[in-house]
Image (cartoon, helix red, strand yellow):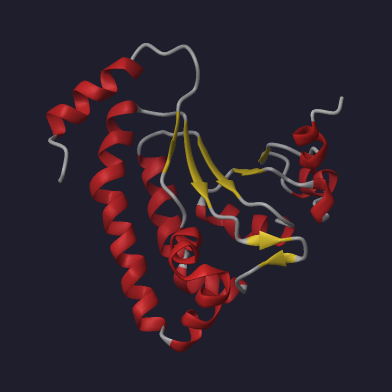
Length: 182
């Protein structure tokens, strides 16, 4: 059921006079597929049935355009967040070429929408080593990544040198934080 635009406006009214930044998520191009197929399944499917993967990606994009973008337009967040988890400790789970083929349209859509609506931050959550992913995501308009897990080999100093305006969130050892050990 599609929420009528008037109801979207009413529900978003409470965010009009906020004093803190608002973040709204859109999901991710890869995480949507991985969530349905699992990491191993999607790794096979992008080669075995690319037409189906393209069709699924287009359907997902239409859902975001139809259901999420009207909320973003009305609430005017400062941050759009995508959750991907497309990396593990040695790098990306999908090749840069396959990312460009299957995920880039989603990134172009979300980042283009953010730019058209003056949303200053497009953030992507991906665990693991995201050093290679920064170079791939930034040209689409992503300007923030997190959590920059130290244990996965992310080098925040190298990122800062190469991407001086990039927003880096994290850089902490999350296992230590989870333990509550000061």
